[in-house]
Image 1 (cartoon, each protein chain N blue to C red):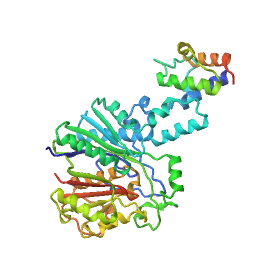
Image 2: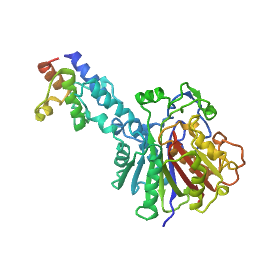
Image 3: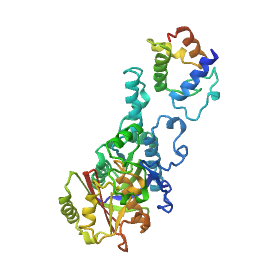
Image 4: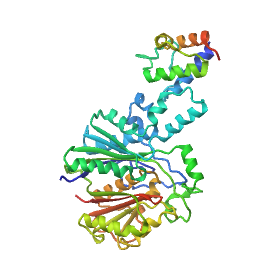
Length: 354
Length: 85
């Protein structure tokens, strides 16, 4: 089987991550319940005629994809695999509102077209003129990992050489209101840089798009190598340390071999215990990194964690704003990512230097 | 009639997400499809729904649309003659 390399990255997030020359050198601080993205100039990447039918999620996805392709020095890829938890939420809300407001009449096609989950992958393919395999995974907080797993299998078996994968989700005002009512979003705006120490329930939400070209051919631009990815729909805290250990063992490494563990803490006192179980257990002596205080929580926020990991490995640098403990970091060779959302849909991803 | 034309231009810009356009950019006799504004078949559907919703006009013969949606002038004339609301 062939190895799978991360050959490029493209990110649009609540930080200025669309510039691949930077790695969180300037951090944007927010006092919000929901984080907006730092927008690139979309017109630099998308013709106006095409942009007018693109929802925010599509624009973010298309531009992050184009940045990733530029970074990879590629014009085309063999496949496009997208992960999204909620798809183009704003147009879904618009379409559903129109059904109610107009008593199920006068429904127009545009918001419906834009509301489907696989529109992002479709629009990326249209922009890139890619007629290859195109698939969208909608699996809550393992949507991105599902996309990665599909790409990894295809690349290992040499069914494709270069695959664009990504995670994208956008905030919808009405849906966010519902999440506030049911306590998934924190009751008050908080300083997001302090949110990981929060004592309240709920998370600070966000949106964004993080895309990557994965390849079975290493080049001078390669960021790292994906060794393994594993997803679990259900996993209890009591099983976590054992499962993490078994995952590492299956890949020939132990907890002591992990140079940095990247955790998906979002400051929700109800569910951050999962991360604490690992942080105070198997990885209590390992440098720990968190990232959701920079990008907010969303179903594919772990793709931002993957972006952080890729940049750490390539730059051999760990910006202070990401650090969750003080253990000294020497060389970053092996990185383990762990993510879950509200106690479900857990994922382990092992990435190493190449 | 001038007020109707102004209203149509505003609605077209909003409904069709013509983000970079303002009312002054659309002349009354500009071709809406093809070489003019460059609208396409999805826009045509949006315009048909707009006629129904805003003016109570149901287009039953798709061939009619070609002449009606030629320009703001032709749309306004057709709406003035056939509107039910």
